[in-house]
Amino acid sequence: MSGIELNHSPPHKNLLHRRQSFRDIQGSISKMNPELVKTVIESGKKPTSVSLSMQETTPLTIFYNGIVSVYQVSQLQAETVIKFAYGKETPTSPSHHKLQTLKQGKLDFDESCSDLPIARKRSLQRFLKKRKGRVNLGAPY
Image 1 (tube, rainbow, N blue to C red):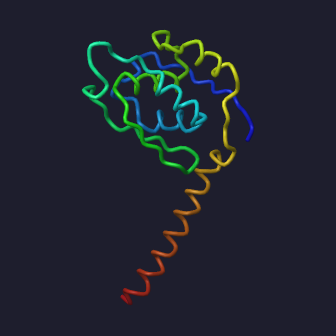
Image 2 (image 1 turned 120 degrees about the vertical axis):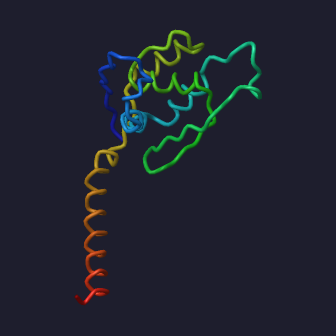
Image 3 (image 1 turned 60 degrees about the vertical axis):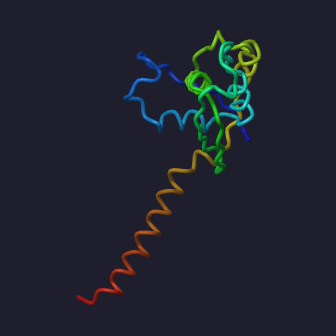
């Protein structure tokens, strides 16, 4: 594994703007160390008036290095992860100093992640070639 620094220019509009694509978020999160993502999720600000069992959560799915991870997170925790993925500071977070320290170090990046588009393209080419062969065998016209 080699380390690289993520340099995401933050969008000028609201982070949760409807035009923002899921692929952008997924791409940013997939380059992060999974332990770092867990730390960010766990460090979300917990509301004082609502107990954790009564707080509404939804599943957050993260695809990283061929592994699918699903977390039950609140809206605030999801926003914290997205802000962190885009390089925004989260000063309201209780462990802001801890996140700042982790952010200063280089994030782990798996070199195989950079080969994913090429592997996908080759896989698609193999699939289309096989499908063309099956169509030609089934239709003598």
